[in-house]
View 1: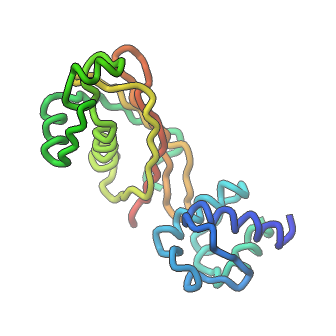
View 2: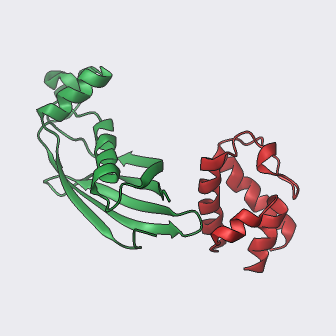
Length: 78
Length: 132
């Protein structure tokens, strides 16, 4: 999958996990941009992303991300 | 992770008067299906049907009391009700650690409640976070 395809799949995951179909993700999106993206929903997002892409992250990887684009880079690197 | 993948937990719950009365006294759901045998029988049930959310209370007990650590919190739970539960039913509960995320210390359990007739009365998933 390329970055845009991953972004599309992530958008669906965010809609489902955060229960908001109006969320528009971009590579620059951060948690500050999405009201529902708080510390607890972040955990559920990570679990859902791992399951959807069949990947496993480390805690240091997660903490290194500054935006959705860096999450996508990490998925591609797996 | 404190919990291990595929670990199975089992427990037996009884929906006795104290559970039933406690639920009604606390939440005041006195729908006729739950308090009136004749009403329930007219709807095709053996007798009054226990509140489905009593089982959510049992799930709370499972997470809070039966796991090998108290350092946990529930993130989400989903339950599907498949068969009615009646007063004094004994339910065999089983949960298995079905998924884990090391990165965020999250465990997902698949669970089910089975009655004495070996019918699954409810099943679902519950997701917890290990607190560090």
